[in-house]
Amino acid sequence: MTIFLHGYRYSVYTRIARLALAEKGVTYERVEVNPFAADYPANYLPLHPFRRVPTLVHGSFVLYETGAITRYVDRAFAGPILQPASPQALARMDQIIGVVDSYAYWPLVRQVFVHDVFRPRTGGEVDPAERDKGLKEATRVLWALEALASDDAHLCGPDISLADFHLGAMVAYFVLSPRGAALLAEYRRLAAWWRRFSARASLAATDPGLPVTQP
Image (tube, rainbow, N blue to C red):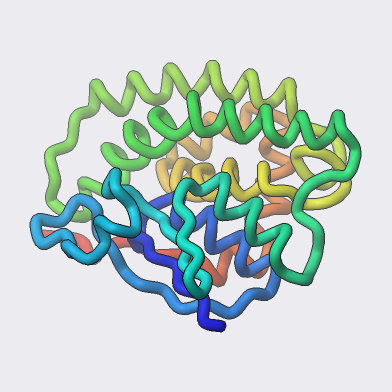
């Protein structure tokens, strides 16, 4: 049964789903959907009524929302278990995912990465004040995540979990900004975690690259 993942190449949430699929060793087909494009495909709306990405299609089963997708992938397919067995470690995983989604995505990705890296390459409008606001807010969320992170190999303990994918996809963009990389280096646990996570084959396999620089 063919699995399709509909998503936008540069979306961190698409990459989170791809990381889970890669770590489980699941073969799938990618369908590119740019939710920001003027020629947004009309046939995608029945799959996702809110015009977001990603969406997973497994046979007749259609699933959107990244957290639901990654948990389904973990439960439905063979491979390494991506959620801790311990109730406390599982709760910590859910907490970190919640913090990352609620408080890290906007400053790390939409403010710092977009205004320091993405828009300069694509010729978009750059707002240094917006970038600086993102750096200020990133300080608070990184401080909070530093306190939650385990001293083990991964965020929630010795084994990798879905929390690593959520934060990893965002940090991968954040550190492309020299300012972001310098800020992350100030947090001992997170910096050590990133050195380990950034070496994973799944991160390299899901790297979307960057757009070609515009003149």
